[in-house]
Length: 200
Image (tube, rainbow, N blue to C red; front, side, top):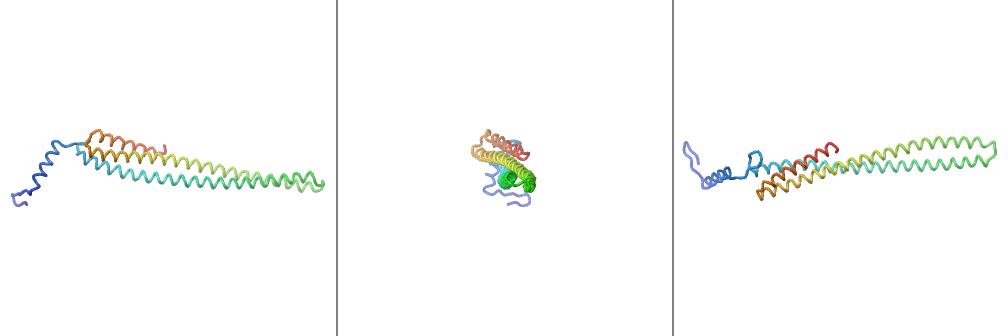
C-alpha cells in the first residue's frame, strides 16, 4: 500500500524484486539483450504466423495443381473425341475413294467431291485436335509447376514447425545452441518460403 511518501511492501513484493534482480544478474539472455524466454516466445509467435500463411499457400497450390490436372484431362478427352471424329472422316473418305474405283465413270466426280470434302474436314478436325492437345500439355505444365510450388511451401512449413519444436526444447533446457538452431531452422524455412513465392 502506498501513501504520500510512505510505501508498504506486500509479502510477495520482496520475492519478486529479488527474482528480478537475480534474473538481471544471472539470467539467460538471448540475442539482442532481451531475456531468452521473451525472445523465444516472440520468435515462436512470428514463426507460427508465417507458418500458417505458408501452410495456406501450400494448400492453395495443391488445390490448383489438382484443378489444372483435371483441366488437362478434359482437354485430352476433347482431343481424343476430335481424333475419333477424324478417324470417322478418314473411313468415309476411304469408302468414297473405293467407290470411285467401283462405280461408272459418270458417277466418279460426285465421289471425288466427297473425297475432297472429307480431306478439308479432316484438316480442320486435325487443327482442332492439335490445339486441344497443346492446351492439355499447357494445363499439365501448369499443374506440375503448382505441385513443385506446393512442395516448396510444404518444405518451408515443415522447417518452421521444426523451428517451433526447437524453441520449446530451448525453453525447457535453456541451451544456447538450441536457441541458435531454432533461429537457423526458422531462417531456412523463411528462405524456402521465399523460393516458393518466387516460383523456384
